[in-house]
Amino acid sequence: MPELARSDKDAHDCAADRDALAALDRAGMPEPEPSVRMPSGAHRGRGAVTNPAVRFDSSVVSPFDDGWDTLTGEIEEPVKLATTLIKDATKSVIAWNSSPDLGFDRAVNPYRGCEHGCVYCYARPTHAYLGYSPGLDFETKLIFKPEVGALLEKELRKPGYVPKAMALGSNTDPYQPVERTLKLTRTVLEVLDKFNHPVGIVTKSAGVLRDLDILSAMAKRSLVRVYLSVTTLDPRLARVMEPRAAIPARRLHAIEELTRAGVPTGILTAPMIPSLNDAEMEKLLEAGARAGARHASFILLRLPHELKTIFEAWLHEHFPDRAKHVLNLIRDTRAGGLNDARFGHRFSGSGPYADLLLRRFARAARQWGLDGAREGLDCSQFAVPGETTGKQDAQLSLF
Image (tube, rainbow, N blue to C red; front, side, top):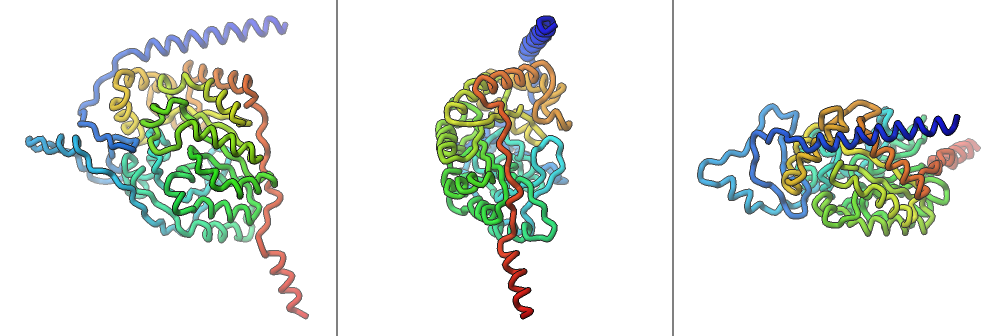
């Protein structure tokens, strides 16, 4: 019976492989050209090549050439885009969610917008809620929370607060370049450390090593886990896809140093983009394991809201020879569209090509020992600093 069961599985895998190959063939089919192709808006050191209108705006301003080639001239010699910092005046910092797709129900993001400029970033559309474009605005207009530490401490002190793992970097990278100056992520870690509050961190930056003193101390109490996101081993692809993030070699070095310091660290190969970086999946997991990663995860590219047009414009700008192929493969993994927002499908996709990616990942993770159970984070040590002492002082004052 076991032999028969294995034969059935092999037959199923072969059929799935044939379906995946058929999807690859279909991906070569032509697709309609965009109705209007504007001149390139690429800027050195920036990811997006467009700055689409905010989807909530009632009116839209479109570029218009007046016949004197002024539009072409402006785009051929683009003004250097400086990064602008804008203070966030919000009075709360913990963002709550009830998504069944996420392994956490709360997060802190010291920054909104991200200077790394990753063109595929699923967080780009959130910039529209602030009145800014998810395109170039997302990576040049950064919102920061100067009081993030004090506000976080206030929320953790609320009566009835029940600790669970806090996500840091769930929306935008907590170690993007501006963190070197503002140190808001470090402030958050100092508060969480003081409260013995567990935290999970995701980043593309080797800047996480600046906080190794706090992270190693928290690791001794099972209070922290870090994932380094590594999408490619090709520095040239990384430069155009995520222009201001650390080069791949530095991210792998960060995994090494964190592991050496006793901080549980994993590798996140996300997003996997069909026919762009997905061929590297096995090599990425091997590199992560050799650097000391204990666990691995991956997410398939998803393109919500304005991200569809942002990514498509970038693809035609940098990879015109394979743009149609990539987009058709994405559609094969997203039920015919460029995005599938259904719970249970958002991160993994569906269809033969998505199934093939999942099987490749599972096989490589087993091969490199990255498929074990993750170390648990300890919530039982949570304590509000000074609370017990305060109660004792109140009692003593009765005498």
